[in-house]
Every structure is written in structure tokens, then in C-alpha cells.
Image (cartoon, rainbow, N blue to C red; front, side, top):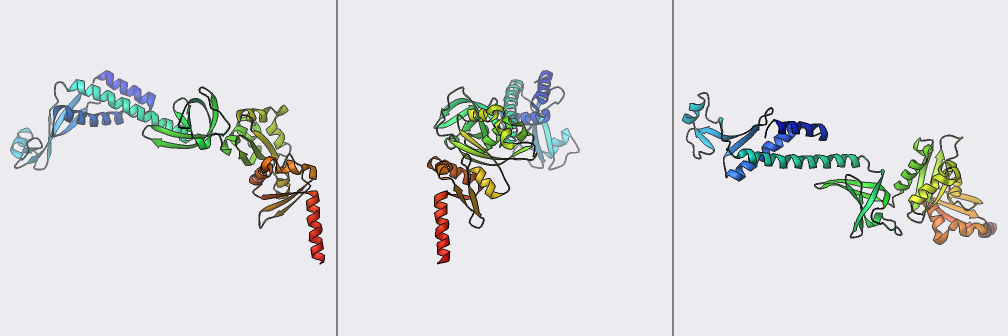
Length: 356
């Protein structure tokens, strides 16, 4: 090692952010192992790299004792005094034992250590970058599929899209660009392990934040999301500015904003409804696109009894109950939907029972 090597370490410090002193200490520790491995030494040694010239020296360390038993580890007080008369029993004396051929071994070892530390530092930087983006959206390129897992290339690293985070009807093809939601970032010896999702409600929320400036700026707020990935979702929005229509802002001119989100979610249907602090109005809005005649809320049981016109009953319930199910998830109330005729009949029965 020489001046050029030291300048290279300084360049690594500037470009990679790895402290030169940390690298040198790691190289010294590795050189001790290399010395013992190549020269079969059982003695205590210390390796010192000159911080200005890069010169490497190996020193044997022996303890001063009155009666040495192992000359590789101990030295007599008499011999020690020939080197330094001030030495006492129990002191440690160092003697240079640098082998002539040690320079080649040192250079090779130093290179290995530096490469390893650079890799570790880069892994650490990548982990920090993505750990801070947990709960955020990223764009990846589908790389491969293994054991039902889909692996995405994120540029400096890759992420895994496990089966339970995949939309059941989506096909992921190699080299396809895909927006995903980061759910977990773990540190491992091989670098960060990043888990992403296509089913998480957070993906929908972040897509709205990207497409709708009013949400990004905080004028319009997403209050709740209910999602059945790949099929249909409901989003409740609220405007902090009475002059801004939250639903209109999310839909965008000629529906361009919501259509961009639908395209990214590959045709998933979206219902954007107005959030209201009045639970009766909120439940009625949540059942959109169905028209609601009346809502009765029971806070104790968290049940919302909803009345709709007869011709709107199937629309309010939805195919296989999906509309009512999503409305219940969105509002937090169990939704009990009845047509006007059934509701009126129940009211008459209730009145008759009361008169009896």
C-alpha cells in the first residue's frame, strides 16, 4: 500500500460517505488475521498503517515477566531492559516483525476489506432510504416470479410482492412497470428486504395524493377508504374549503384524475363520496350511487337502518352485497337496507303491536 491507496480511501470517503479511519481500522484488523493465517503465528501481533504514507508494519507484542514460559508471548525482564531500561514486569514490549512479502498480502487483504465495507455501506444507505419510505408508493419493474412471489426492480435494490399482497385477477408480466405500496422494510445481511403491496388501502390513498393537487395540498382530506382490491373501492373525502367540492376535485375535469387512478388499478371501480360529520348523512352518501330515502342510526349497536326506494334496493345492496358491505366498512356501521314497502310494513306492525 502507498500514497495512491491512501488517496483512494479519501476518495471513497467523499463519494461513499465511509469514514477513512473506520476503513483503516477494519483493514488493520483484517491484516492481523491474514498475518496469522499466512505465517502460522500464535503470537500477539499489532498491525499499524501509517496514516500519511500507507506503509504497513507488523509488531509482535510480548509481556515482560521474570521467568518467560512461551518466548512468542513473553520476554524476560533482562532482555526487555536491553531494549528499554524503564520497562517493568507486566509491561508489553513491541518488536517489528514485518515479513518482506507481506506487502502483497496486505494489498490484497485491504482491497477485500474495502470492497466489503463499501457493499455494507451501500446496503445501509439503501435500507435507510427505503425505511424512510415505508408507507409510501414506488414504481418498480417486474423482474421475475418465484414460488408465487413477484420480484420488482426498484433500481438500486429489489422488492418482493408476496401472494397475499397481489390482486387476484392481475397478471404481472416481466418488464412491466407497476406502482406498489411499501408495507415493510427489514434489514438483513444481504441488504434491505422490502415487502410491497397492490392490495393495501394505502396504495389507493397515495394514488389520490399523486393525482389530486387539492389532497396533496391539504385542502381536501381523505377521511376513510374501504377497498375490495381488483373489484371496487369507496373513498370518503372532505373539503376544508367550502368553495372546493371534494368529490369534483377528486374526479377532475372530464373525469381525468379518477380515470388515471382506475387505469393504474387496472379497472378497479371507484366510488368517491362526500364525508359528513352527521353519521346519517354519511351512511346515505356511502351507499352511492343508490338514492337513500332515510337513515336511522343506533349508536349503541352501531347499526344503520336504511330505507331506499324499491327500484333502488338491488343497487343499494349491490352485486353479492358488495355496495352495502363497502359502505359498512367505510362508515363503521352495520348497514341494514330495506325497501320502502318493507320498511312501511314493519312500521305498521310496530304501530299495531303498540296499540295492542
